[in-house]
Image 1: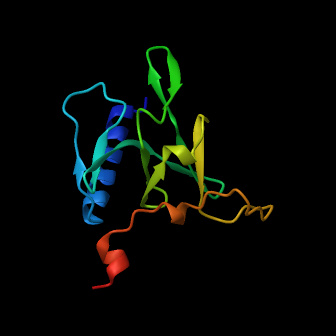
Image 2: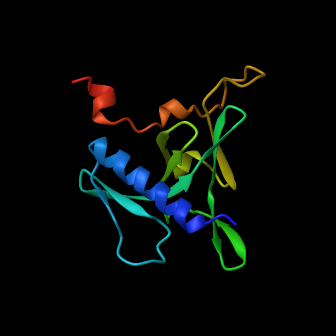
Amino acid sequence: MRDTSAIGNRTLGVVLSTLLQAGHRPLLPFGDGHPYDLALDQDGELRRVQCKTGRLVRGAVVFATTRYTGRKHRTYQDHEIDYFGVHCPDTDAVYLVPIKEVGPHTSAYLRVEPAKNNQAKGVRWAMDYEVRTKSEWCRC
């Protein structure tokens, strides 16, 4: 049986670490029951981040945009969170995806490789959402 709590804790840890290394100021909420796992202080404005574990499927990082509450899955709403913080162990990367760009679907895709049918219109490219640490973009 999969230990989903342990998977979620690992993902939160990687997302938190990556955001810190990239120069962000993450905040952790007190207690349980929040629809988000952490918040970001962006120039005095708080942005709520729900962390999700992605997996690489046919050239795209796939992640759930729902949560399980009791007996049913519920889609996150934009009044609950601002971003999905997605860690994909297969790509060893973290992506920060605005909820407004995901839509009311149960999962979302970030394309890593070109589609086999060469479709480019409407493709959400993973590299556009990747959180880069200062050492990756600064080369200092």
